[in-house]
Length: 496
Ligand code: SF4
Image (cartoon, rainbow, N blue to C red; front, side, top):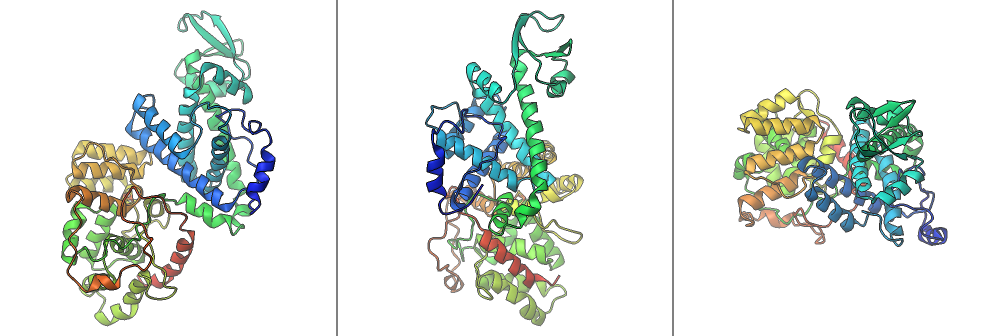
């Protein structure tokens, strides 16, 4: 892909017959896009696909994939985000183009580690499965021809298990493509041909797609060094792979609405597990190492602690441990003021999203930051959940989700169990979203009582366009600048 301001102009010229580049609504994504594209379009396409993949992940663990509800919800998301969801009419060129380009952008972003690759592959496979199964018989045949997977339909009876069915036979698909069916004894091998029931053909196509995509991700990963040297691209790709596509919870709408004496109770009722763990560790040890202070400090800021409250909160706790008041004022107070945008570059730092917590800076010995669903040993997590009175069946469900690497979904399950809900009703992406949704539920949508204090006013954010604390707000654009600046802030937190 190229990036230039002439992108649109060139694109119009290139388009020609707009059906040519995308004869099918479905693709194996074998050819990367070659047209120019603006950085703004690059980012918006990528964010939309990421949203789609997150919905795919969410639906995949909460519904049976072949159920009507799964299909209806996924189709609604396709429509909303303007991706091709079916074999649409010829005029869906823009949707097909978006589908093509966005896939390759995320491929670049998600080839960077084994964990990212596995997540991306899983969601793309589910996406493909849904779309392939939605095609009519005629369109399936056309698609298969297009991707050189030609099956020859035969009508015959085979001994024993394939009775009275139309059985396509393929000479172009090797046994490796039918390996899952072979294991399940759902394929008949004769004279070097694999005879497969028509209804199982999707397993072969999916297997073929998985192999191609898996190989393509590995190849893309090899070209990473050259991509990483592109200073425009690398921050965007990094941001996408740690991405969170929702409000940034930097809004100060709730500033001053939290009382320090309520934090203990709130940590039990409304904090996600990561923040509950950090709060407990702080109370027990009267100290948190810098990763914990960053993660927890910005979360508290996001739920409404003013700068003065934050200084008071951290100081009270730290001087109960090994840090005296003087050391706190000289060392730690500066970094807290910095995180509130009152020192240094005066950047107003935003709380970390789940993806950032899950994907970066894993905790080491003596650290309490990170995501317990991602970073705790299953046995430890189990004990923690038991101590929080989560019922055994709920713990088993959470551990299953963790095993499948669905950390945010495990957290959603924890939310449901601790709030006595059957269905959380939102997609969890951010610890502050967890808090906001919990408070909405527990207070019946009532506003938190504002603390009568002079403290809040001085903390009102000057930028009134900031988003409010609601999970339904429009997404923010990339926080890459803020991310880069955050690295600067981390330098201030060098003391353990
Ligand atoms: Fe915290 Fe997000 Fe992990 Fe939940 S999923 S514990 S909110 S980081």
